[in-house]
Image 1 (tube, protein in one colour):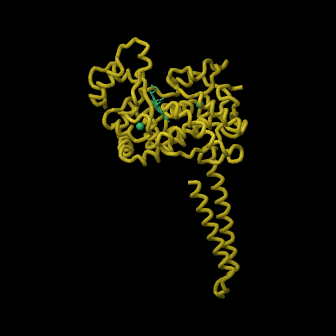
Image 2 (image 1 turned 135 degrees about the vertical axis):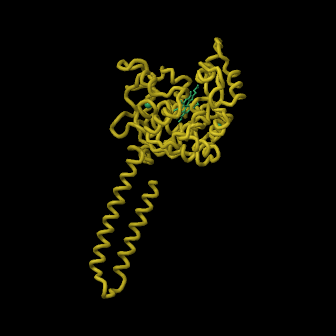
Length: 369
Ligand code: HEM
Ligand SMILES: [Ca+2]
Ligand SMILES: [Ca+2]
């Protein structure tokens, strides 16, 4: 879009220059008042230049909530390469790390915006226990990878790049490396200087039981369309869900078949997640989010349509009249999913961020001074 604005402006300005040149060069035809026409064209030209300047500047700021696509151009031009190279050994030593990094990003952004608050390990005197102690953050992993990347970035460009931006860039790499789209993300986030309480995290992170209504409330409030809200749930094309997050759907108060779940799959889940298991194994049992849990593809939608979705939201999105067409389209057109996912990712990662003089650039991601 920004390129489009720039190109249109350049084209308009060029057109006015050509008209002015023609007016200067063409022989005076007598029946046209050239001085008046030239003055009019000049005035119009000035208006076009000013409007263009305004919209180009304005677009850069407004489109991404104060973030920009070339934020570290002068202060740390190599930052994206450092992140990409730094992640290679992480991705190859732990094939499940891309899923963890993508979820980490959502859980940071959902509580007080994408400000790296989730990385802080200190309890705050004012707020009590840190956000990570919330049960909703169960099985959140890979926080230490962001600290590792931060230490690499600090060597090259000290005190310039926020942990919040590093987290977004890492999540973007996670999607791309798993076969998903390569998303251009605007940068310039700053880190929170305090850690929110675990109560805030508890209140803001969605429970595993939400339906379409709550889903739309969460994401439409962040400026997403219904299509983008359905697309961001496609994140569940990666990773796993632990049994404790689906037990309520499988067992609680359910005698008959589970709404929207195929019988064979229901039987499989009951076997994979036994009801009254007391052993230490029970907490670590999990099932795949979709059959290609390491690949970022559109199988999540195809899977949900065949009644193999794990969470209530997976089944409801297929049945609800507001979302069903998008689920179908993403299931049959991966490119459409990738496009909507990319714009949803940018919106999620730009919502309510700290920019400019707000927030800080932390020295260490796990500590606020
Ligand atoms: C708003 C509705 C959402 C709900 C109710 C939800 C719920 C869940 C649950 C229950 C799990 C399983 C956690 C576990 O048991 O280990 C999970 C995993 C995951 N979620 Fe979500 N989620 C939502 C949105 C998102 C969004 C917006 C993203 C990314 C932008 C995301 C990315 C992931 C990923 C990648 C995993 C797999 C993590 C792993 O394997 O380590 N989720 N989600
Ligand atoms: Ca946060
Ligand atoms: Ca997949």
